[in-house]
Image 1: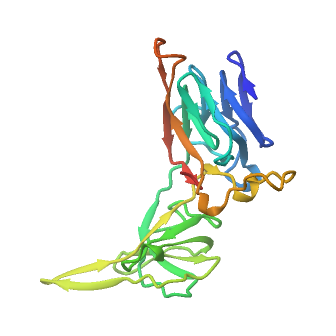
Image 2 (image 1 turned 180 degrees about the vertical axis):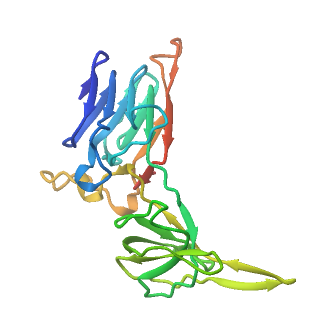
Length: 275
């Protein structure tokens, strides 16, 4: 599918699964009368999206620097056996958002992108207490967070989905904390330790980071890559780790032709199943 150079296209609903979407003109996601909810989410699904020289792709508010008010997902599909696409000396594989022109992706900024545990979270717990005001910080039910390990094993870092957030509480000492409930229990303990060195009290606590953003670039689920009509077709697996990627490159037809570099502004965007 191609958006020709003379067209300005506004995407106001999710697309079917496309092959290659080549943008020669202007493409933007609708930003008026949209909300950051799953019901209002606009999903662009394609094997690859190519923003050509002098073309523009925008997911933001009405003006530069204004975050996108809705929820947008660019879902990229493909596997190792998908044919590559060539533009002169630039080769573009599948599951790629290729920028040879210009792209602006401006998501909503979280006021509390990360914090620390205020107290130890035991293995099997579904409730943790974090420093700060999670609600005012932009955390919401349905968001994903990561709790870092407190041991020497990176495998003990865990990702969980928020199912409830209590109102923040401020102690007499002026410390604000929030209780956050997860949809599933923690598999490992995440310990907060307090030690004193030369009269100075030092607190060591695992970080808790907010992963969810209202603009997301993601690879398609592995199950989406199988051709249901061909049982012998190559089927990607979890171990293949063939995810989405963002490619910012230059476009030139040959070594004697002037090349044009792509440019990208990417702010507060989530990458999932990528790399």
